[in-house]
Image (cartoon, rainbow, N blue to C red; front, side, top):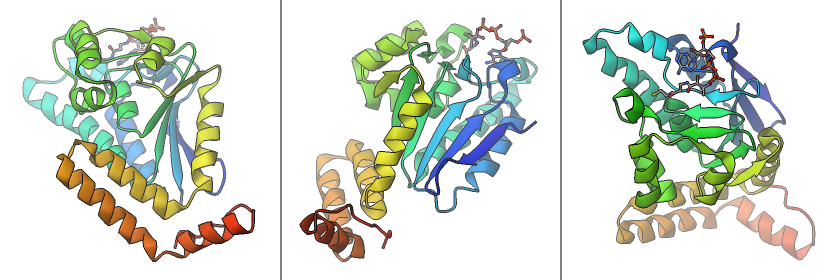
Length: 253
Ligand code: COA
């Protein structure tokens, strides 16, 4: 069985589907390895969508059955394997969209939090549930959630190990959109992004991600990113297309 299904929806939009329905798409070691393999194939994709297979789960996080059999000194290395995957997704330079099609708990939500944009199906549920099993979020969840929804909402969710609905997640800004089928919505967003100038999209992502730098550094990062685009062919093409009242044909140069 392919634990990560990989499909180019268009030449520019890559979809990765977590495919371990029998365990609510939880992250076994084997699945993590397959995920790395799929990320190696990103190639020229301009947007990445991550979702779960089936309609029950995006991912229920760490494989708690595997975890139960670990000796104490094996636990952190296992957490680190999830951390490494989540960090790799966070560090991708192309835009990433998590299409949360069902339950996203613990590491499953942490993976979604490492993406740039989250959309959810109406029936999805999510939460950082770790304190309910005696630990804390270990794959950057405390940091990312706080940056996304603010200290007050993040504390409320994490300390209570609260499981919230898609509508509630939208209300606090954890997901950008809720729809009947989040994959349709994710694809629409990806199409809009892929239409834009690839280098400008990458620079914008970089700068927005840097918002936790101190202000001086953030201002400088924006200045440098803007300047790096001035000499591109795509910038001239954008202006030319506007004056000719047509869509731009961006080349990523
Ligand atoms: N690791 C390993 N197996 C998991 C799992 C996980 N994180 N989450 C669910 N599963 C397994 C269940 O044990 C069950 O397997 P079984 O059929 O062999 O008993 C199967 O997936 C289906 O789960 P089940 O709980 O029966 O389905 P449900 O629809 O009632 O509930 C969830 C789904 C996701 C809400 C529920 O399984 C859950 O809360 N899981 C734990 C999520 C969590 O807290 N993760 C964070 C870990 S830090």
